[in-house]
Image 1: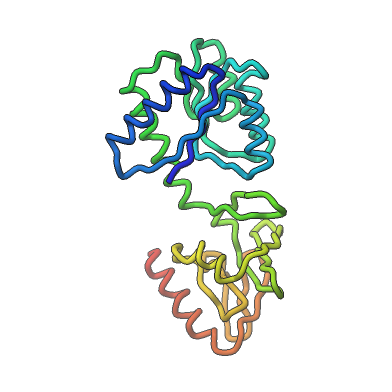
Image 2: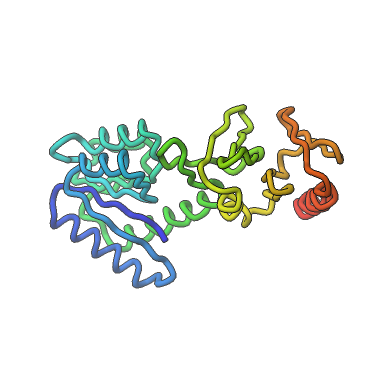
Length: 242
């Protein structure tokens, strides 16, 4: 399921774009998405900031009454939002500025269905690939994207989980270890070690019965009986990698 936001102060343009999206979906019934339209940029910004709304794709008009679309996207980026942006506009004038805020496309209206479908196909494929590289976690009341490769391990500490990252940072997560592992278990590099740890095999430097050393020097101490299963998964992971 993809979340797509449309932002245009002209209602008829929102209708046209929504209709093209529905036509695209008819050609690709396996692709599911939810579309939300915004006639106000400030409403979209409020939604993202206050309600943890994280669209996969935002189709944004350049010319908005409250502020230019470029400025809206700049504010989204400052909030930490990484949604893919496609600008839809009647002028080529702001194309360079658009790519400075990491827009993926800049389309001049009217946009043909053929061009729109081709670009949408490419963007959604990239979103799907990117989804395989990170998870979304609620951290300090906000949804935050965490790169899978950045995760060293997670340790249960009472009713919270402490997620350690390769750069030395850590996050306190107010979810159960079971819930977190449910998000990570589809990735072969993440394994449970006893009931207290989830470990990223790709970051293990060495392991023994007494300790597991990660590639940044941090160490964890596996509980009794967990060494042999961990050792087998570690070798299996690297054999499959080879």
